[in-house]
Every structure is written in C-alpha cells, then in structure tokens.
Image (cartoon, rainbow, N blue to C red; front, side):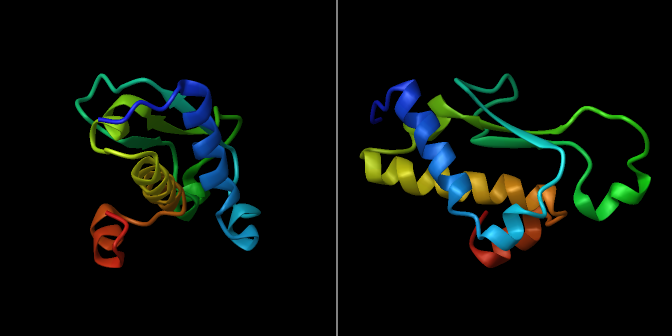
Length: 114
C-alpha cells in the first residue's frame, strides 16, 4: 500500500475530473464529487448516488445534487506506487461519472472501465 496524503489525493481526483472531455463535462448536471477515507459499505473504490441523466424525466422538482464519492483508503490499499494511484483514481472517477450518464456496471466492464 502506498501513502498519498489526503490533499494530494484530492488533487488527483480533481485532475481526473479535469481529464473528462469538455463536451461531456458540460453535460454533467447537478452532481457533486467528494473524497472520503473509506466506505461503510465495504471496500468500494467509488460510489454514485443519484438519478442518472438518462432518467431525469422522472427527476422532478428541487432535489439534492447527485453525489459521487471517491474512497481514498481502498484505492491506496490496491496500489504500490503513486502512478498506480493516479491510474486507479482516473478509472474510478470515469466509472462513477459514467453512472451519472446512465452507463451500467456491465457495460463499463465491457469497455474496460469496470
């Protein structure tokens, strides 16, 4: 396990978000991204909670933003170097953002983002 300070880890998440193509980033709507140390649901690397854009017709009224959470400790536990952390953060951010766009886990695995 590699140690990456929380501030640096948050920078990596921000860089991964900045790496999303601009035309897709502009389509993200009412979603907030957070970094937490670990999940209470096991060793999740990331979690999307909300209503995917493909289901927003059912969205209705004033609602809280969707939430993407990236979990620091489980990612660090899988990595031996900071470059591996950079890669895993990127994969995790893309995976959770894809859920915001309505892409399933099954499809993400087919595409290599599982």
